[in-house]
Length: 88
Ligand SMILES: [Zn+2]
Image 1 (cartoon, helix red, strand yellow):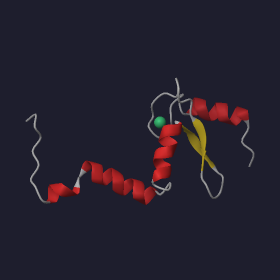
Image 2 (image 1 turned 120 degrees about the vertical axis):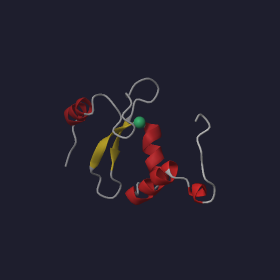
Image 3 (image 1 turned 60 degrees about the vertical axis):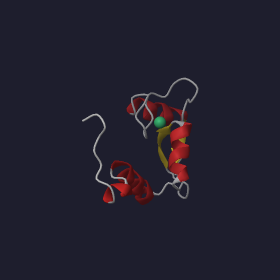
């Protein structure tokens, strides 16, 4: 399916002018890029180039990205040492 400039503008408006990955405005130096699924070529959304590279580092693998997010929220070392926030 051909994705026209009008389609891209409609998508940008649908996303509220924000990156579909980090949900921050697309402006300034990183004007964003149309992100595609690598094998099918299907458009996924408009993302900052940095955000697009970020998911690319995880090979666009949802399971790997979920594991990384889970690890950020629950780092494995907490299973060894009881963690207390400093600002308590
Ligand atoms: Zn972003």
